[in-house]
Length: 553
Ligand code: C2O
Ligand code: CU
Image (cartoon, rainbow, N blue to C red; front, side, top):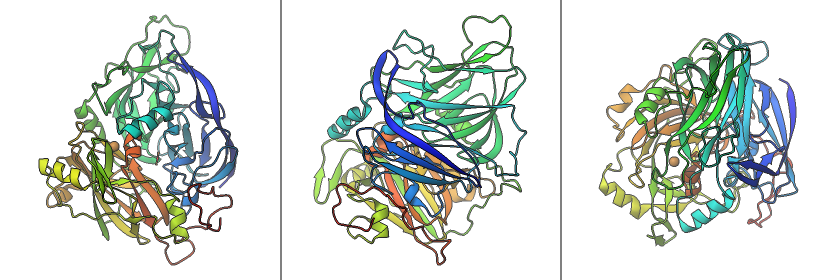
């Protein structure tokens, strides 16, 4: 493969959106950030220069990074922050992804503005499993907050409250014509030619909600998700959770004119929060050429309404792997490790022997609410530093009843902790996520796994039934994804082979749930050969300020 080099200058840039001018953190002054382009088989080096005033890290969302967790990025998990006025070079190897993935900051909430698309073309000498499109368009869905976001979040976390929701969604950085919060119109425009087919590369960089997206009058044909091909889905709208990427074929086959592309929230933490701008973020699709068009673009009539869970379920049920000769399915059939993980929101956490029943909001996996360690998990693992992390709790699939009893149980047993699940190399893992969320109404939780994609073999509502639900698992053409939303008050089952040695974060990709502790870590041990072992650390790994013991990097 080819080697590419990028310089990413992270610094504050002044921007104006929704009548508010403020500095936001950006890469190379652009918002959304620069696009990385490579072919499958290529290697990309990104030298990140931190010219901001606080430490942060970058993550390559959906890239496997074989044997190289050192360049994966999540702060406290695989590295400490890259300090202001320093730099660090990430190495990104594209070995199995194809299609669109993305990159984003992975420290506090800076990813709200520090993010961009990654385009991975088919390997040299191979082609798409669909006809070559005439053109390409990147669409990044984002969120806009009022004020200084990290300040807002820190205040909310300190008080144990839900941080305020974003004031608007954005399409390629702009809220569009219909935003009610500000009379100044800032709208992204995409000009297309009649009759041509384009490949839309869509990135869901939204921070605090799941969203719907549609283009008026036009169908969308989804051909890939999360960097893997799927059987084409023809749909008038899509549902997207934070973290999700999609490759979508789009044909400009309607009467030439102006059409809105629009995004609208599907679900967020609090439907009743005041001050939220429930108008839709829009962008304009414009046909090139001479024609008489009405002044007002047409709005997508097919965009589902807020909390239309039925619409989103119908959409999600269609996702299947392409499962072709060139893109086969390799879902593990014999399982060596079965895990049951309860995904939950709680209002209290215990730390050692002190329990705070003080109505602070936390979130948890198996009733452990993640606590950041003083040195990142990867260093602690590599240099055998003891006392940094414990064992992720194992629960049988029947350990609780999905009732008020559970609610009480949950309240009394949520602990702050740093726990990891250790897997032997090549173990085959089946993981059942069970959503509970009796607190705060109920929500889907888009769970994301670093280091490998997984097959989603089933999902359903209510309690997972260990006797009957496995009978309906799809082991033929389940989709291979890196983020999947555990349905509100329901379950999702995934499988993967632990053949990527390293330290890999998994967490809810709704940012506030991640900061409240809905996080866990897999350590995949080395195999017996060099190819099946983790690489040694590269030079220049950032040191950890709150860890003083000398380790040899
Ligand atoms: Cu998209 Cu842990 O991240
Ligand atoms: Cu969540």
